Amino acid sequence: MNNGIPPLKKSAFTLAETLITLSVIGIVAVLAILGVQGSIMDNVRTKHTIVAKHKFAKAMEQMGLNNNIGPYYGSSSDATKQFVDTFNNYYKTVRTCDNEHLDECFGYKEFKFQNGSTYDITKATSGKVFQGEGGALGDDYDSDTVGIIGLDGTRFIVSFNKNCKEVPSKVYEWTDETNHEAMVCVAAVMDIDGNKAPNTVGKDVSFLGNAYSIGKNCVFEVDDICAGAFIPLTPVSYSECMANKSAWGLQYCQGEGKTTSQQASSYDSYAAAAKACGTKANMLNSTEICKVMASSYSRSLSYTSSNGGGCSGYYNSGTLASLGLSESSSDAYVWANYDESMNASSNAIGKYIIFDNSRIGNGTKTRNNYSMTAFAICRM
Image 1 (cartoon, helix red, strand yellow):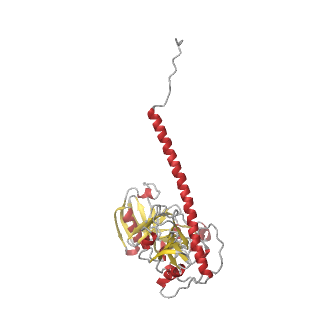
Image 2: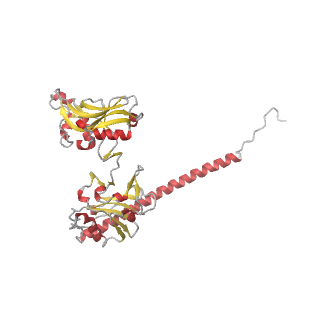
Image 3: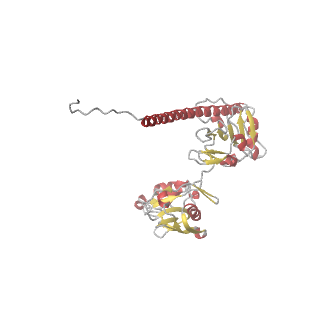
């Protein structure tokens, strides 16, 4: 007799519930182990990279102490080869490759950037492909590159500054910095473990010397146009424009010819585009902007190169959203590189491409509207 008290129900996991729970625990454990392993491998690669750069730098330091670093004479295209021929006396190598066989020394043809884009190693035939701290390295590095495989398996594609005179003869204090003062004449990309994965910049692939990156990483690539992303603009003040007018390659600043009080409230959206691109010369012109639009955003577009270029037609649904704007927005401008002018009211004029109610058009406009939605597209 239970005196009206209901019997206790037995509670337990079913076999299926137990198996599911154990599976989840197993998956979490595996992910945790993989995460720890990934972190350990990243640390190992970082230390390996530092050691590899240290070896390269110490070899160059010894070359400097023996006054064996440049200048190299003869054909300027041979400067890097002459450097490597001497460098091999200080750095143990198992193979070198000319610039037509770089993938044979590197062990593969393409490496990856963190954003998922790739770079074809066979394109690195001269040091001009390297990007330095302030941009492309230029003609000082235009000699043919050379591939190197070190005795420890580290792979390099090297370029030497043909106008570099010498590295100061001294012993450099080494730290854990990933670059080194002894490498002032060199730009290179390296992989610490050859064709083993992940072949990714920031992991097993890195840059040394004066190289900070490689290639142009175009967001838009049409014909011979290599351009970056749309850059939203905030107009610059009259004083900032005037202070940088020459550096930005501008003919006018909004506010010129006006009173002091008017200048204090003058802002220039076109000048902001020149600022974003470094100089007006790096802004795409109207025809180039139209080509970018035709390749990526337009369902029907025609363009012309006459009168500074321009285009007309329609853009695809979703274009404005991709630029961070509402699809119902109108009057979004892209400033173009073209001759500037000043109108009768002393307002600076710039040329633009406009998105307006699903249509693309072009024209010229005063640059003093602070609230206008404007963009720049820069040549890379």
